[in-house]
Image 1 (tube, rainbow, N blue to C red):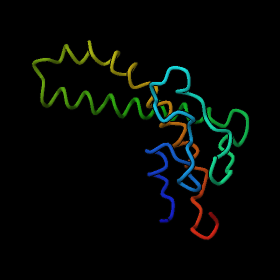
Image 2 (cartoon, helix red, strand yellow):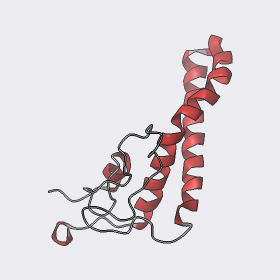
Image 3 (tube, helix red, strand yellow):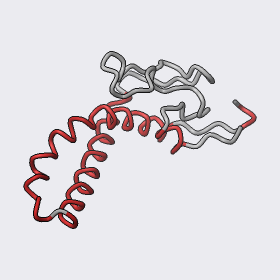
Length: 125
């Protein structure tokens, strides 16, 4: 097995240490009952995924950065390719952001933890 990759673990709901165990209980971000339910520890390597109370407050800032980046890209696409329909940008941005909220929530939490967890080498897994 290859060495775990932080980017892979963030994008594919995996533990940032081993890259095998699931970070969130449900793989589907739009599962209304479990979209925010995390494993307390990695089912594969046992890494603690909730290091301390309030740890994920920093993920709020990550989430904000993802929203801003998305809105800037979305706006630039509208300005460069759909300038005559710029009013639709204003009408569509709020529903689009609401639909992307579960994805950004999960992405921000996985990214935040990945900043603090070093991927394991092949010998320690």
